[in-house]
Image (cartoon, rainbow, N blue to C red; front, side):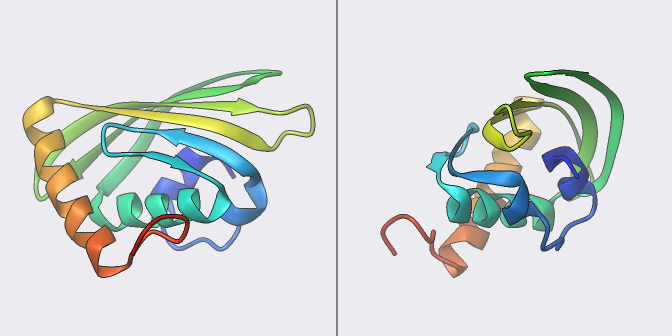
Length: 125
């Protein structure tokens, strides 16, 4: 299961098995690092995104790039999720880019609220 598939099927317990302990995640919201932080962030993303659809996935030995669409409170988003893998196939770095900016601002505000309710495991409470 890729991170994009995880976004489509929120709540999966398998995500923590797919990421390295020192995985890095880059997004417009934060630069999270470490397995617990990534699982925490993606639970928040999955909780606020609706109708996640994966339209195309390009893969090679180093990772995958997924093109997806979703909605936040009825507003459409499109995105690209870039995952880098180690030789064992474990995700070591992920970057999620979403647009348009107006909808992204709504998503960031909602995500901040969700993360405030459940403080980041690897960061300050």
